[in-house]
Image 1 (cartoon, rainbow, N blue to C red):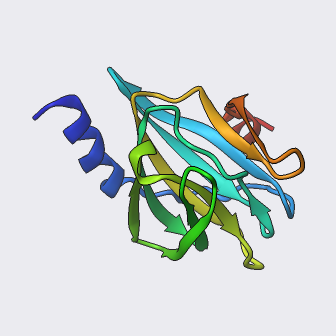
Image 2: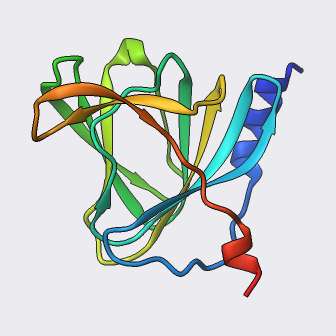
Length: 151
């Protein structure tokens, strides 16, 4: 079994028991695991948080919900809205740049958690700036698990 296939299988087996202190409108990105050509991130979503509309800079992306619910809003490259999907615990979704762009939203009153597998690892993506109506390259920043476990 190649490393990416192993990472995909691992993604389905991960259980998150830890609770996270997160504010309304806030989202945090933690690197959970990595290997050759892939990484798994844990995303923690406060209520009323969202990403900008974005692509994945050539990476393939799988999402697995582990707590709460999120909405995935799907767009074409313009970006013109196409559809939305409800992501609930145990559901999976996949995106790559050939499928278009997307935005992940937590409009719900509870914290949500999702695991994201990217291949290759992703450190930048292109986001759509709603104010300027232009696309721009954005660096992605990981938070540290130390803030969760070390008090």
